[in-house]
Length: 422
Ligand SMILES: C[S@@+](CC[C@H](N)C(=O)[O-])C[C@H]1O[C@@H](n2cnc3c(N)ncnc32)[C@H](O)[C@@H]1O
Image 1 (cartoon, protein in one colour):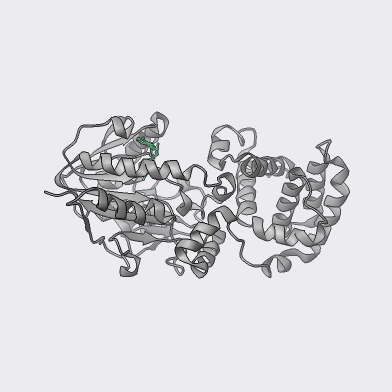
Image 2 (cartoon, protein in one colour):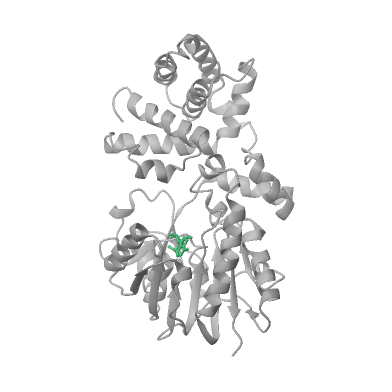
């Protein structure tokens, strides 16, 4: 970080304002160059600070509340929130307070509130990490918390919130030899075959990156392909393929893979990933609905969804989104399932999955497709390491961030294997 730390803090303050105030996602902001002007260590610092602030936002607001007679303007509130995060993680008070007072003073409208900022942050500094630790786990914003509580109950949502607050370790999918990846990286072999690293650091510096021995993929995201069992020689279509984690798994398992995605940009990443790990697949840039070259043995449909299962790694999501787009996504998922079924040969299998915590994007989709298509059946989801308790009534698999607490959680995911009548 630069000596004063101000550029990284200003950037974090900007990012927080854009995410909470303008509904923009972190990935979108980074792609638009929000970090581009910073040196590498400041970039990492700004990003970490923003993500920590989002994970701890509700707790930071609870700490600030007794010191604020009324909510200040967003520009001040975000500076205070970032100040809380830094002060409560043990940063020296002097530098932190000065930096956020300067950020508040740099805006003409909030300039008169620099005294308040200074006074509040000094009080927070007195409370410090001990004051932070005694506050409850941050709650998910209400628009998302409500449907989650309705679906899973209050206790489960509290456990999910603890997992979201803890963040995510780094999971690798080995190309061929999990034991060799464990030996090279010092990671832990998970029951389902992924390798988990805590405090991994820079991904491209890890052993085996250059030689393409693995790729980054959450352990939960690696399960849908495994549900297909032995795919050697099978003709498999990955219908929403980018950035390609599941395409790589299918290709590594010996399938004859067609990888399709509507986004040309994202498809470039699939091609790059295939090259890095030395695997091949036919790549197609097309809208899934316009693709009609059928007779596949299996189709994998990792459909666009709310991504609410990935909040551990993307804590910006509940603040950038408000759920208003989810209805259209749910309709699109149902239409995609129907289209995917037309691309299967008789007796072929469709794996439908979403990285969502909402039953409307999982369990309900499968219940409804079974009503729409007579003769369609659900195969019991099975592969090494699957806990039978994850299986659902309609025959799918429900994964949640609060599962595997001793290993460090997993992404929220839903998946089911549907078999077309022969
Ligand atoms: C959840 S992501 C897929 C992740 C990918 N399966 C993996 O494991 O790396 C959903 C993908 O669907 C693609 N997509 C969205 N609408 C689509 C459409 N109409 N046709 C094809 N792809 C689409 C998006 O571009 C995005 O890459």
